[in-house]
Image (cartoon, rainbow, N blue to C red; front, top):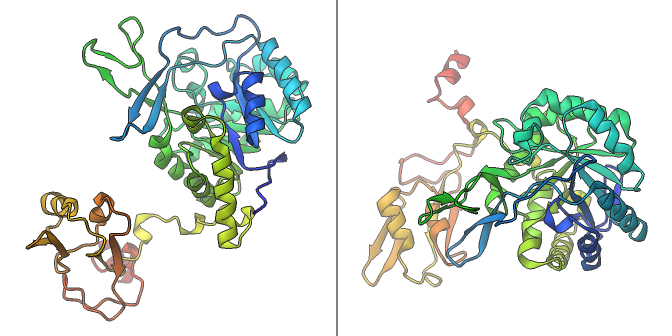
Length: 434
């Protein structure tokens, strides 16, 4: 089995799977059980400053979105940071770290945006023996209305300022957790780097309303007839998270900045995708809340078997896909493919035909006996038929070889690359050539 042990900004763990700062990491009981199940690390649920704890709602805290098979696709969370006293959390963190020295234990923090508040809490956390801190600049609800969470994370100057305070005050590695509720994720990442952050973690939850109760006419979850926006997590946010991780990994200004990937990690494959796009480890929440702590055992086994099958180590996977992440204008416009339907796998459901005929390019014919066939003269290789087909590998995209004639255009497929920056239809390319 492949060695999954990793070192993330000097924090060692037996595998790259950490529990994210969330309800599963709110107390000693949970964290001990998580370690026993096999998690490589945890980020303790966000602590606030000393004094009266925050007050959470006592009604429903989660809304949900499901797939057609009732599989949970996302949770909308309106819970705030820990509502347990600071001293209780600190005492439990110290006890857990003492008994589990080989596991990563990072403490998430969110306090008012003043230098005094940050410098007051950091020595208390450092005394517990925790391995590092994660600055929660991502929470989009409740705390953000108080000038914390994403209210800080949406202002790069604030990120840089607070990160610098933390690095000036503490010896602990500092991970800055970024909000996705922003136009360009590279800007807050650059600010964290300027402030001296050792790493960034992303994404935090996406600001959302997942559903409306059509009897009460209020957002869900509904408390006494009212609802509020919350933070969306789970498989539904994974595409957003992958893109933002990749943007930071490939940007010249942030390339090389360690990344902890978060957002919809449910299987080993999800984790491998984050790692391939530049994450050094992954954090998980919704999968554990859906399937329990032992889900990590499937994740570690699957990732290990995958690495063995590729004959690579964990370090070889990290960032492997980053060079292949491009912008649209650099894609090869001379690469031509056509859809192919395997008649032996086809179940004649007709989804591909309906989708293509009604909403795409009318490139699939329905022959007698509900036999479906691609019309190459109309197929633009949009891939819609592949995505709507319920049978895996029944429809595939096959690239035409150089020299073949594309029946749609009547032109030979060129062996040369030609992206938009050099395409004859691009007026700017014509001007450059002239």
